Length: 53
Length: 469
Image (cartoon, each protein chain N blue to C red):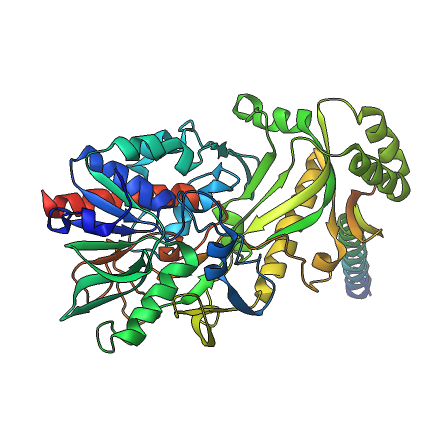
């Protein structure tokens, strides 16, 4: 019984770690993917601008 | 000394005949004069611009537009320096990677070249980022005819004859015996020890091609005469605003502060990493206020907050606002070439030039990469914002602002299949015929060619005088 409990606990810890790591890395990736620049066309020219512009 | 008839001369005492009287020819003659060596300059045109004379420069162009070849080059004493812009800059070190000589071989002559051109020997390159540097041009006001006429007239060593056109050369066994010319309406043969062909980036090839046709077997038929012709693609790349203050912050004491356009060039790193040829971009020193208004109006539409900030600064000295021009290097292609026209001839019955010139697709790609990277640099460092012309951004093409630099056609090298002259500018398999000018360039770089041409002339003067003295 104890063996089963222990392996269940191990499994849930691993599961938790996987979730945390993947969420963390996803958020990290999402942050790095957030565009800081954009291009906008007007009167035959394409402007290279910052997001905050 | 200016002479009116070749018969006045004792040609046996003139070991060097120079054909052409532009910056390369005059520089060479002046340097030979210093070494007390006699030479004769033969100029096809007169002292002043002449419409009729210019008609001998007529040419047919196949492919993309090239600035009018009948009038953009000057067939007169002083050559095209009679109306050039005067922009001077040496080629970059990396431009010489396929040449038979290195930058240092020409830099030896920098002081004399600057003296002749009447400019300061200062061409700073300061690093803005790993991809870009601020560069410095010098602007020459030298009109060679005006500047050196009196000196040539009084010279005991330089003889000048005008309105005498050399059509071709004659010779045998690899020795050039005569320059065949028409003077005072008569055909004349000029004999000399050394002949220097210095007639510019188109005529050099035309005269050699005509020599090849008139004297079968005299010039190696395999030499690629007229081939690998190039220019500097020059275009309106876009518009933009540049905050000089931010540039100064990046460059600190290295900032090149002088009256004139702001020039930015690519570094070798961007050339290598992005597999492009080099280029330079510039914004004029003074722009029309109409252009300022147009650019600010567009900026207010695409980025209102930034637009308002820029609009407040617009007439401050620290802000440059206007067109961004681009002058880039062009790849040498064997198919861009000068040929003799099969049907049309000039007044002396010499076939006119038929120039095949097709813009390279890689030029527009290079222009886009340069502008895109510069746009990102300005954005990231907040030193300005730029907009790229839509056609270039879409890689559709570019409108040429003019093709005024004629490069290649008699390129320098060791391989007889890909070059026409050797590293000392001597025609391959010929003992005494030299070719001088931008036609010898193996690559064009982004810098205007005249400064390098003057350096090459000084180097050739050393080579020839070493043979004679």
